[in-house]
Each structure stands twice: as structure tokens, then as C-alpha cells.
Length: 278
Image (cartoon, rainbow, N blue to C red; front, top):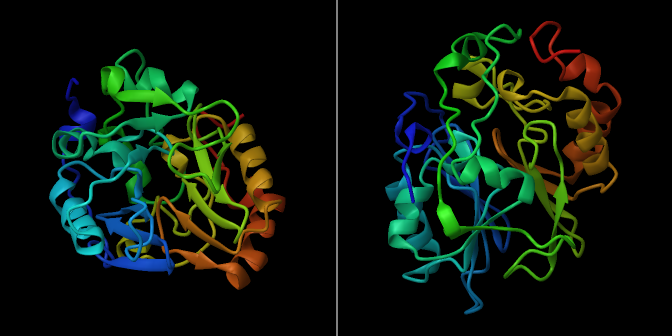
């Protein structure tokens, strides 16, 4: 494994929710790490093991391990599933793998960014929305190289170690972005396909002001694909959702706001200007 600035460069930004975990349902625990969310899937009351979804921001491994130990004791995860490979979702990954010798899974289209072959497109600081968009050129986009530690998810939608869940390809924010969905209770882990905070605004991020929003504008290169991904997720009618940024939300809020985003994505989510805006 080769380290890179995407897992080494600390971003001095936090929120009022950083370090706070929320049990969304009995076996889904969302933890805010600075300004991004990770998920623990698994019940502390069973011996079936658990799975980590995403790996937080750089320099956050100690926080993640402490929360995992509090919830699951010394049991390590069965695997780490990545919704995508941006720095705020893989920041602690290399450090975690030094402690937990577990497999990592991602969509096949995301593997070049996780095996050192391809960097992400440059951030777009010209988009409207706030100061965090304006300074986005400082965010790391370099590929990390996990070598054979990362594998492609099965092509049929199954997720290793999570038999009741399936992955859904939700590109736009990245080529290989995925969401995770459980049909039994319609629980959704959306990654950055949509989020519940205006991620471009420093004030909104710091206070975690709740609002429906598309993926972070400054790191989304394909807006038409992003819109189609939101439509796809809205059709699932999720009962709850954990997003990559913002607070977890439940069915009543989702029923009102997710269809609105799917319908009016062009006015709510797509920036008025920007180099990736068609």
C-alpha cells in the first residue's frame, strides 16, 4: 500500500457533530468524523460481525477505532465498503488497514482511483455556494494505491458480508460511486449521491444545518449522471438515510424532500456556473 496526500493531508475543518455517533436503526450507526460520515453496519448484540462503510477524513483513524471498540469491543470489521474514493471517505483507510487486516471493496469503476492509476478531476472553485467551494482547490484528489487490498464488488449487486443489502451504482459525483440499500426496511446509505447539508457553505457545515442537497458541487464532474442517480434513489422510497455529509434523516423528511430534489435537481443542486456545468 502506498500512502498519498489524500490520506495524509489534514483539513482543518470540523462541525458541531464531529465525534458524535447516532444509532439510525438498531444495526446502523452513523459516526461524524470532522465533516464527513461513516457507518458501522452490525448489531452489537450479535456475534455475526460488522462492516464499516467509508473511512472518514485524514488523521481520523483513532476516532474511528475508539468508536468501533465502544460499540463492538475488540471485534474488527469483516470488511470495509467504500461508496467512493474521495479524500474525506478514504482518509483514515491506510491507517485502519494497519490495525484491521480486512478486505476493502469498491465499484470496479472506482478501482483506478484506489490503485494509483488515476487521479480524480480537479475541484471546481468557480461554483457558487460558499467559501468551502472557493477553497476547494486545496482538497486532495490524488489516487491512493491499495494494491491487492481492494477488490471490485460483485457485479450482481451483492455486498460481501452483508447478505440483506445490495449496492446501487450512483455515478455523477464519481464514476464508481455507489449507495447501499436494504430492501427489508428500506434503509439507505447514500454516500454523496445526495447529502443533507449545503457542503459549500462554511456556516452550514459547521452548524450542520439540515437541508436537501445534491452532491458537493466543487467535486462533481457529471451533473446529468448525478441527477439520474438521485432519481434512482428517490424511486426506492427509503425509510431512513445516512448521507456522506449532514445528519441522518428519516422517512417523513425523506418523503417530502427527496422527491423534490429528484424533480428540481437542476435548480436545487446543479450550480449556476462552473467548469463541469453543461
